[in-house]
Amino acid sequence: MIRHLLLATLGLLFTLQASAADILGNWRTIDDETGETKSIVKIYEKDGKYYGQVVDLLQKPNDTACDNCPGDLKGKPIVGMDVITGLVQKGKKYEGGEILDPVKGKVYDCKAWLEGDNTLKVRGYLGFLYRTQTWHRVQ
Image: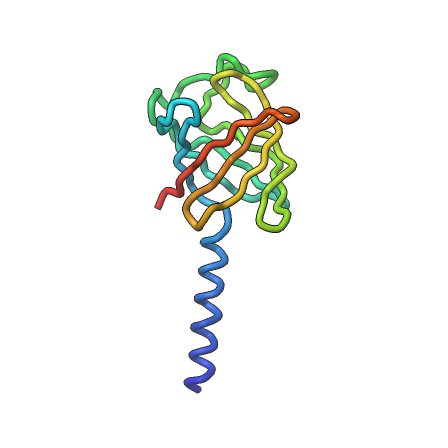
């Protein structure tokens, strides 16, 4: 009986550790050019792909519209907008998606990876040019 309880407890610990080591959840974004905290992005999974939705703007009103966004996103509120779309997990990295810079209105290819449980590196790139931001998990 004790052995079963111990095995169940260990299994639960491994499950909790595995879930903490994925990118799901809320992240505080840090601008790589200014070092300023910009927003809170919630990363969620849908149909095997990962998306990042802005849930809070930290330096602007939450009703700020995306004036520079392309297509149907132009003029829409940034809060509620998916700025990361279509990432697919490949081993320890998440690749194949896109990231939108709502300030510049540009869309870039995207990849992301964890460094520890609470630091997410998010890279937007166009060809061989790229920018990498460090995001921090919101506890």
